[in-house]
Structures are given as structure tokens and as C-alpha cells.
Length: 146
Image (cartoon, rainbow, N blue to C red; front, side, top):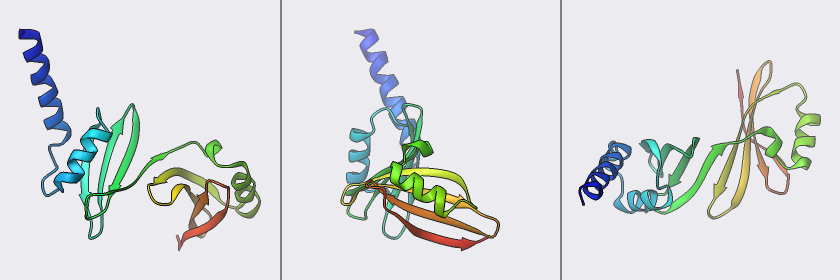
């Protein structure tokens, strides 16, 4: 009985620590997050006008979960290796953006629109973020000058 009590206290302490900075976060969001991402650590919350974002670590993977203002999950994202891109997209990027260097590739699983990748590229004078569909279609999501 004593071991069970101590285990329960540890779970409560860990949960309290993981969700310590959740003031002003929608209860629906918190409940969903705690259920779907059980075991998440280093949880940090950010609220915007139209979204709530949780940045956290789960199974040694840095992740983010995005919720709308009604508390519904929009999607999740995390960094992936460039090799995870569809072959068609990798070929297009290598040919069309040869003068750029890939900085980061993010996989974003949107509840409504499905899976997309976002590839950050840096060139001599500009930075480009490409959106890549699961089918390998490549489009410019954002472009800015350095």
C-alpha cells in the first residue's frame, strides 16, 4: 500500500511539473494533451490569437501540438531526416533548389489536411520554406530575403 501511495505521488508530481506553465490554457486542450501525449516532458505553452501551441519532448523526440481556439487539435509536428521526404519531392528540390542548403525538414500531420512536410532552405540571398505534400508535390510556402 505504501509503494502504491508513493507511486501515485510521483505521478502527480511529474504531471504537475510537466503542465506547470499551463495557466490560461483551455481545459479541453489540457485534457486532450494529457491523454494523447501521456509521458510528455518539458512542456511549454504558447498562445496566439487563433491557436495554442504545446512544445514538448515525447520518447526523446521534440514535438509540437497545435490546437484551435475551440480546443480542437489542428495537428502535430516534429523534425525528420531529409530522407523521409517523398522521392519525387527530393528530386525536385535537388534539381530546382541546387543553390540552396537544407536547414531543417519538419513533418506536419494536420488533422484536416493530412501529412505535409516543410523544408527550410537557405541560399546566398534568401531563405525559402517549401511545402511538400505526401504525394511529393513541392510548392513555395514562404520566401524571405536574408
